[in-house]
Image (tube, rainbow over all chains, first blue to last red; front, side):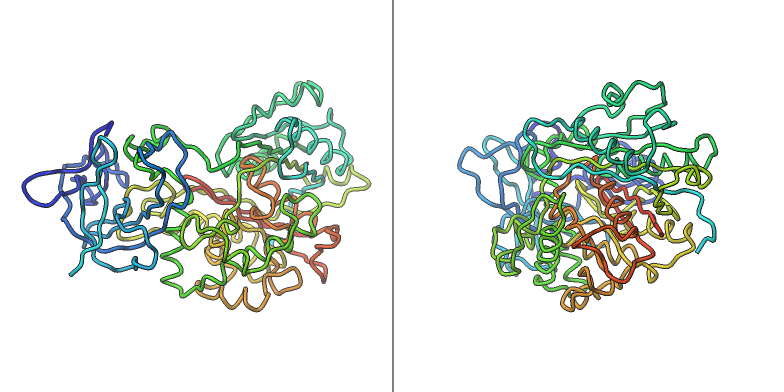
Amino acid sequence: MSGASPLELGDGPPRLEAGRCGDCGGVTFPLRVRCPACGGDLERVLLPPRGTLWTWTTQGFEPPAPPYLPDADEFAEFAVGYVEFDGLLRVEGRLTEPEPERLRIGMPMEVVALERGDHLTFAFAPVDD
Amino acid sequence: MTERPEIAIVGAGIHPFGRHEGVSGLAMGVHAVRAALADAGVAWPDVQFAYGGSEDAGNADTMVSDLGPTGLPFVNVKNGCATGGSSLVSAVRALESGAYDVGLVVGFDKHPRGAFQNDPADWSLPAWYGEDGLMVTTQFFGAKLQRYMHDHDIPELALAQVAEKAFRNGSITPHAWRRTPMSTGEILGSKVLAHPLTQYMLCSPGEGAAALVVCRREYVERLPDARPVWLRSVAFRTRRPGSFEVFSPSLPLEIAPSPSVDAAREAFERAGAAPADVDVAQVQDTESGAELIHLAECGLCEHGEQAELYATGATAIGGRLPVNTDGGCLANGEPVGASGLRQVYEVVTQLRGEAGERQVPGGPRLGFTHVYGAPGVSACAVLSR
């Protein structure tokens, strides 16, 4: 992936890197220099591994490239959504489940690493329990 | 309502929307300007200033090569989906300042086919956001709508009813692009592009132009054949922290009201009018769900009331609150620079009673326009006969 990856791969489950504002306490993703709400300094924090699906939609056509980096294989429709991390914020990302029938608002989701060609990015996967 | 409006629209012109091979965006703009000037009975050399712009089709001020280089101050505006709205607001404020008596506003555009292509760096976003396939406007429409329908109990049928109305209205609008009526079944059955939105619930980038001649009250009296429509107010706002906008990698838990809420409220307050007074409205319908959401955000209905409004035909041309009587963006496409002024053109035409087959019956007196776009901008206007 070109540019800094927001994915933290340690010993435990994959986590996303976010920023917490020293002034207003707000949390933002991805980590950046200034708080988008108040302009304060941000410190690096890792989000919890799990959240719940706040909303979602599907990508029914191949996104314009660039900026999209196409898969090596033929384009496969995918879903995207916002996952809410309890008490913190909602993060947008690809979902591993593309079928609308198997997606519903409120379902538990976890952060996973997603291989796209020769690089790793993040996605959200439904949690079975 | 404010007793004595000071600013009038005395001329309105349009170039047909759609696809026009071999015609530049600027040429369409010039066509719209000439139509607006003729409509007003104002000669180009009498125009004291102009604001205009496009997103993808060139610099508005170069139109003087065709219209005549009279030396007027001509300001190029480039402000995304709010280009037309920003031009209109700027022109109205210039007139209100007393610096000028009469001016021109023009918007035009000509986009390539297919979805808009955006560079993450232009939006202060990391490269991975675009590479992963998240830099697509339709995802924002689908995701905001999915949550809205969940929160306010809106059925998918209502989305199809919005599009069905748009194509029905487009079929009787001479300058519209999509002029073939379509059933709700065909609309629901078309390809899902951004669940729950299908192909015919989403508008396409397109081509077209619209222009307005605006002036102060005293100047109207100098135009013997004027059919003025009064601009009771214009308002233009941008987003506040936490509003749900396109290309947002994250959102706070507390979602702030959309800039549409702020712009509409300000427009009604400045006009001394209430949303309930509106006889004909134009709201941004980039996709079906946007029309439903914007009606409520602008105060024209309650959140959750939309299903009933569309099931009962209240927003049709003969209904209680006719909305997007020219077919809106869904039937006209969205040439970004022209779109907001097309809305004003339509309301002017309706308030004058000159809309022909699509005329709202009963002599509408008060009109409203709303444009909304990336990355969280909205402009609204209240107009009256």
